[in-house]
Image: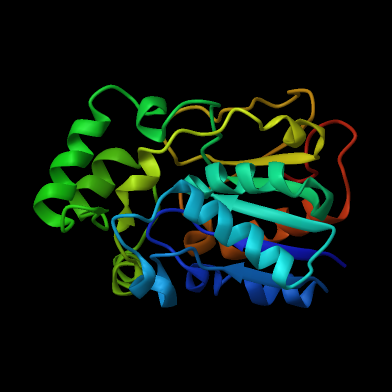
Length: 249
């Protein structure tokens, strides 16, 4: 059916989609989970110089080298920013952008500038004390429970995430988003919000140019509700919803 590229958020590599990819493959899709520099089996390539441009380049290169076209590009959390920038560079290869509880970039701003007041100071302390001076450490239970609402991560899920998760290069939060993202506005886009995550999604149902869906779990649905997430991604890949809503969401 479709070529689907999956990009996880902070700390996550291609491994984070292991509970989702079988269902998408069974639905007939060609599935390509990606690992950004500094994560997963590319953790050894991360450094203090790993920035937003590095991750944009990772995504563009992965799609170009595999010569993927008509790609449904799925981005979770942090990955919404580099995926959007990547799509703006190669819009001819992208059939749809699907955001899963994802950040949406603001032109000419850094991710720290997009964050709530005080966030940069908190992260800076963690980087200095626990992240070797350049990485945001994988979250403790205290941080997870205080900041991610009803995340639904079981003790086994947390252990699985921490066993394979890797600290996030903080330079990605300090580099400014470019201002030339206009090509993305012409692409079909879907936003999948997570009911258990705090705050409101950046797009509301009925926003022009967007489909909207909601999944009844927390911020990491590829871990906590993989089959429901696979169903929504499959539906987004197959059929645009004329009403702006994905059926059954």
